[in-house]
Amino acid sequence: MRWSGQLISDNDDDAAGGLFKASDVVVRTFDTPGFRDATFYEVRAKSVLNKVPGAAPMFGWTINPYRGCGHRCVYCFARKTHTYLDLDAGLDFDTRIVVKVNAPEVLRRELARPSWRREAVAMGTNVDCYQRAEGRYRLMPEIVGALGDFGTPFSILTKGTLMLRDLPLLTAVAREVPVRLAMSVGSVDDSVWRTVEAGTPSPARRLDAVRTLADSGLGCSVLMAPILPFLTDSPEQLRATVEAIAKAGAHSVTPIVLHLRPGAREWYYEWLQATYPHLVSRYRALYRNGSYTPTWYQDRVTAAVRELAKAYGLVRPRAADPAPSLGAGPGNPTTRATEVQPALWDDVELPFQPGA
Image 1 (spheres, rainbow, N blue to C red):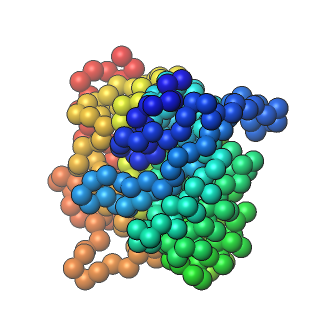
Image 2 (tube, helix red, strand yellow):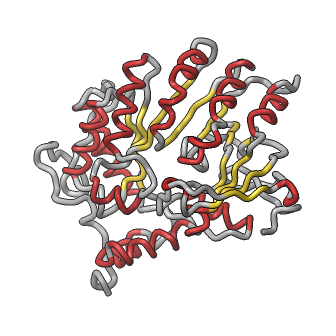
Image 3 (cartoon, rainbow, N blue to C red):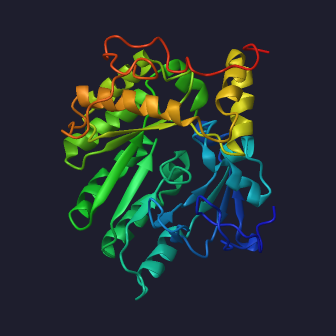
């Protein structure tokens, strides 16, 4: 692995900055059911507080104590980052996990610098900080504690119910600094979940965690992501998912349609061919212009979720923001939520036959 001197970073855009030396790596395996196929590379990081590049990023700073993720989400956009370590973006990303064992102590050193302005820090932006490995390495309690001790607000996005382990600590720290928590639940369709997110807790368990966080007073929002074209985007599926999110007591719901960047795209298509081969041609048509679906498709899905969120009390409609209809689209701008189209992808032009 070309780890020594390699230009790698925790930022999602992989800006330059060597993180550790190859001589610092300790390789471990564990003969327990949850880790039997995994290899862990324990490293001593040079830095863990990462500045996000760009003029107006969604968040300015991130912390990622792990690289690679045992949640095994086939669509994960972070897969390509593994290739910078001479590991592949497929199976290696799922089973060869880099652990920054000194992350808490390095973070305290960085937060103690006079130049640190206590800007908000986001966690879970690249790989999940509450993935299975966290159950063994327990890096997050000290990281959360350090942020609280240095008056630094933070947010956490996860698919891991392991966050509940740290609920007492999160509650205590939230009395000192702003803490924002979010759970990722793209769908409540178990038949899809079992194959597309094989290493994650079930959607039902994640929503149970949302309810626990809501009852605790901390609260939790839900990132409804990713919504998978042709798999979890039907009106009925969207309704079921938003209803379940609302019943769990989520603060809000934010829908995001699947995007397929290089690295994730190849692995996702391999999974699609093996699991839903009849959809491959439709995906190639829908994503023929790049990593993202067409704007019309994203707008239609977002409008559908927004209307359902209003119906279930997750957002309040504004006078200047009329509610879009679930089936709204070209030639059908006023369709009511109870009179929906059978599918959201009817406008996709297929240049060849499905399954060809």
